[in-house]
Every structure is written in structure tokens, then in C-alpha cells.
Length: 156
Image (tube, rainbow, N blue to C red; front, top):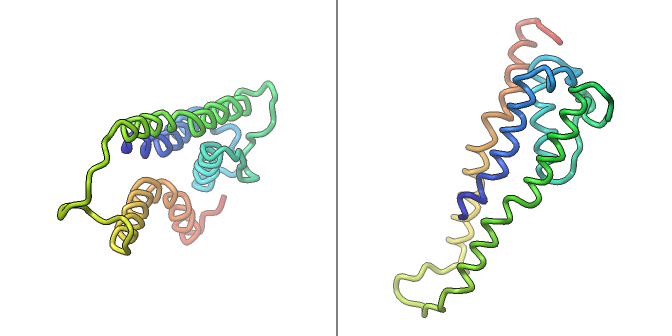
């Protein structure tokens, strides 16, 4: 359940970002073409997953018009907000229910202490490693390609 709760947010962000990039309903609202547009879409869905809803200035997400691309971002962003707010809580509630049913186990020789620096360092390392492996490839793609194209003399 913990793994499921951990994977819901990245899957939500990357799924809706991919959905926006593959069709004209999402790419028509990107006002900065090229790799920067990918960064705009990723940021918008990351923000919506975190219940903020902000976006880069070059992404037309906040205009409820009859154009399908603008309506796509409004509807997909709303769904991403609902998933980011509520869906990941389901496995966490299941974990809490499971922990409430468990009996207290006395401390023994095989118990890993959670009040020392070793646990803190391991916890922070796991959080950083999982976050880097989950988000870094997608988030670094836009700026790296944009810089490589800029070095080659192509601007957008």
C-alpha cells in the first residue's frame, strides 16, 4: 500500500502530461513551442497534482473558452487535482487501519530504532532517490534539449 501511495502522484503527473503532449488538444495551448512547452505542461500538472493549479505564463490553461485545447487543460487539471487530493489517501487509510489492528511488539535485539540518526539518514536518502528517479528524467528533458538547441543556434 505504501508503494501504491508513493506511485499515484508521479503516475498522475506523467499520465496527464503525456496525454497533453500527444494530441492537438494539449499542444494547441502551448504558446512557447519546443522543449520549453514540455516543461510548461509538466509544471502545470505537477502544480495541479499538489492542489495549487498554477502554470507557466506560456501555457493557456486558465481560459474557459470553446477551444478544445483550453477546455482540455481545465478538465484534465481538475481531474488531476482530484486524484492528487483524494486518490492517494486511500492506500494511506488502509495502512492506518492495518496499523491500528496490530498488537504492540516489545523491543528486541532485531528491532530497528527509529529515533536515531541512522534512520533519519536512510529515510531522507530513500525519499531523495525515489524523487530523483521518478521526476528527474522528465523534468530535465526540456531544459537540456532547449540548451542543446540554443547552442546549435536554434531558438524558439
